[in-house]
Image (cartoon, rainbow, N blue to C red):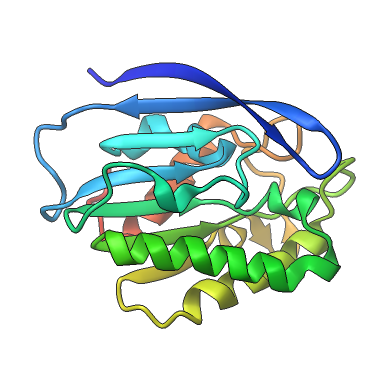
Length: 207
């Protein structure tokens, strides 16, 4: 059985120090997929996806962003597939004037992970419903484009980028399907839909 523990880190955001919860799970599955172990890294969306994803290891942080040194995560080698789920919290921490620096940081993480792992799949953020007090969806959309350009622009054959926005928009508007009351996160059905899409993009077996 996979064991899950909680560790707490204190990190500093642009305006205020936030206490973040870090969810960690590790286990030894009966067999790897395609000969690769899978490591899931990221923010609260990764935490929501983790129970259904079936990764060998999950390191995910509520409030997680590119400020955390994901490229230094342990146990990544040529026998691993890494799935990174990041971006939503970056839209709160990174203003339009800092887009170039943001792109540099994304490239740094993606490049170093791709240099270590056999495969890396970077999963961009979903859309956010209107009226959220902290996250502006148009800014998130713009930052997602920077993120995509940074990852795809590296031109690495073992590095891919997919967007959760494509799963959460309908006719150009953010869909309310499977959302929780906070307008950001998803129900179990929503996370299950994301897991299926991400696993398919990563070339993993359907669950």
